[in-house]
Image (cartoon, rainbow, N blue to C red; front, side, top):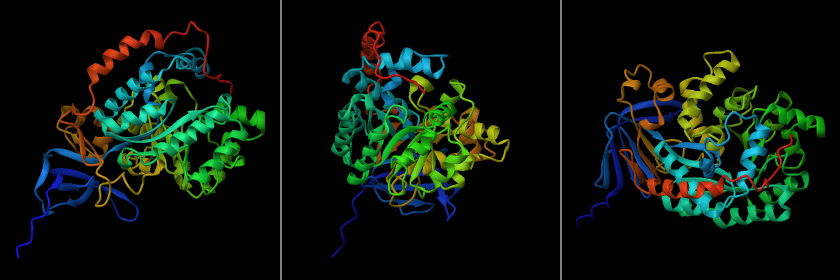
Amino acid sequence: MTPSPAAPADLVITGCTALRHTGADERIEFAEDTSIVVRGGVIEAIGVGVDLPDAVERIDARGQVAMPGLVNCHTHAPMVALRGIAEDLPTEEWFNDVVWPIESNLTDRDVELGARLACAEMIRGGVTCFADHYFSMDTVAAVVEECGIRAHLGEAYFSSQGPQGRERSLEFALRHRGGAGGRITTALAPHAPYTVDDTDLAATADLAREHGLPIHIHAAENRDQTDTSLARHGLTPIEVLARTGVLTGDLDVLLAHGTGIVERDLPVLERTNGRTAVATAPRGYLKFAWPTTTPVRALRGIGVPVGLATDGAASNNSLDVWESMALTSLIQKSTEGDPRWLTSRQALHHATLQSARAVGLGERIGSLAPGRRADIVLVDLTGPHTQPVHDLAATLVHSARSSDVRTTIVDGRVLMRDRELLTLDVPGIVRELGERLPALVDRSHGKRIQEYDT
């Protein structure tokens, strides 16, 4: 009896140069003339000379680099609606005079339009997964499900909202965990130690343990916050999180920014056994003129993954993780006084596998290997700004731009092909958002959702 032919693969990519993590030390290497076979949203085979089955869709990627999709480890996606509205301000004025008054106007529709525009920007920039920490997150989850991107979502809350804020965060996390066919993971999302009191932080830690949820929180964002916390409590923000049970070995915690992490915090973070991660978003730190940056080298030395991020576009002006990758490398060189740190290969590692680990997805995404989810971007390096190529890693980090991403694939589904977005209508989004902006940015009411006082 003649065996029946195998079912076609969903997608076959041929002729690319693939970025691979190899060996126990996960060194980054590049393999030319690689083919990738995708079936059921998973990479079934990858390599040179692999057997190529029939496929529903094929992509000839000659002249392009295949990379794991980038992960934006901390952002506030709907804040693209506030891009450029609070420029050249110190942190306190940025929050109290502009951003928090405007955010008191937010409607679900504003959040939806902002999330749609943000997802379009990230897909076009090769971001296949983002960690979001914001309000009206049911709306963001619906956008994620529709447009096909992957996301790690948390409903933010302050203690000023009372117990209801914490409960809404929990309800959201439980309701959407595993949503969008597994593309959505969730977290509890207390805002920060300076807006969430010890009682709420301890209750959040208990809820995280009870329900098996991670925590995503701003912490030690800048050195002023650390100094103020020491003056008020005799503890750094990191030590406050440890005292309240958030930073203990049995919880997964993603800390946003950490430019205020100091030497005494390192043993606290090390005791979490690597289950704690930090997201760094260097462009915003430069804009706010913060005197320090995330201590990437020290954190890596104690086994804490550091993922790359953009923060929200209200502070960063873009959701461009390529820029974050280049700036992280350059600022770390300057801060450490060592041109050998952070190398281009190290920066690529942070943008891919370390970022995947930071959002708790290190076993599913972040590298191109059989069994991993097929989150893949194809990068065209034929432009004059990327030629000639002497060191491919350096070209990707320091010469390539987000606009060089030609194709973005999440879970085996092509979301952008040859720079054409396939799941989002940008002109329609921009048109309606423009109509809503006058009401959104009105600050005449004198309200704000919170007070920044650190």
